[in-house]
Image 1 (cartoon, rainbow, N blue to C red):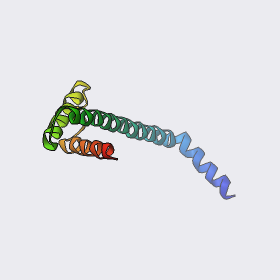
Image 2 (image 1 turned 120 degrees about the horizontal axis):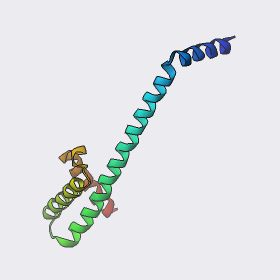
Image 3 (image 1 turned 90 degrees about the horizontal axis):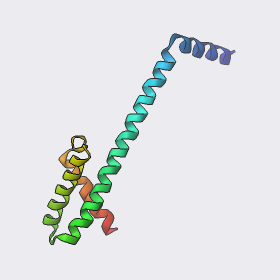
Amino acid sequence: MMINNLIAVLEALWQSGIVPALLIFLFGILIAHFDGNKDITTLLSIAEHAVEWAQQEFDGGETQKAHAISMVSKELLKLDKAHLFTAKQIDEAIEWAVSQMKG
């Protein structure tokens, strides 16, 4: 009896358009979430490349970090993704890349 009531309620919600609207909303949220992850993955990949380059080209931690941040910023501008990240997020990505290199 309880299952029949549940089925009737779900059918009524489907026919009223509430369930399809909720599904469309849920898909929108999921797409936004995975697009955000793709952007973060891009940032971390660029940061790793920038840190490797800076360590090969420059001496000194602060000099290397400044050049790595500059490179990351330029690459994000080229990809039209600079507006997606704050300076703090870029700095954290550089620190993450350094920690990955050190193991």
